[in-house]
Image (tube, rainbow, N blue to C red; front, side, top):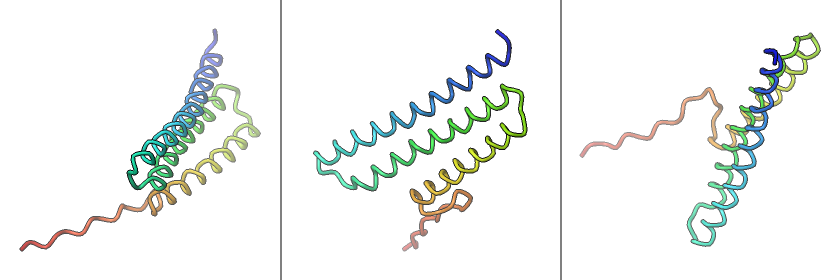
Length: 120
C-alpha cells in the first residue's frame, strides 16, 4: 500500500472518530439530562447545552483535521485547497459561535477572574 492510501485511510478514521464523538456526546447529553431530570438535580438545560456543545466542538475539530489530512493525501489542486479552505472557515465559524454560546466569551478572550474576597 502506498503512502497516499495510508494517509487517506487515516483521514477516514479521523473522520469517523469525529462523527462518533458527536454521536456519543449527543447520547451522553440526553442520558445525563434524563437522569438529572429524574433526580430533580439542577441545572438540567444549561448543563445539557454545555455538554452537547462540547461534543459538537470536539467532533468539528476532528472533522476539520480529517479534511486537512485527506486533502494532503491526494495531489493538492487549487480546487481541493479552495474547498478545504471554505470547509475550514465554516467549521471554524461554527466552533467560535458554539464557544461564544457556551462560555459567553470569544475563544481569544480571557475568562473573567473571580473576585478576590476581602480579608477581614
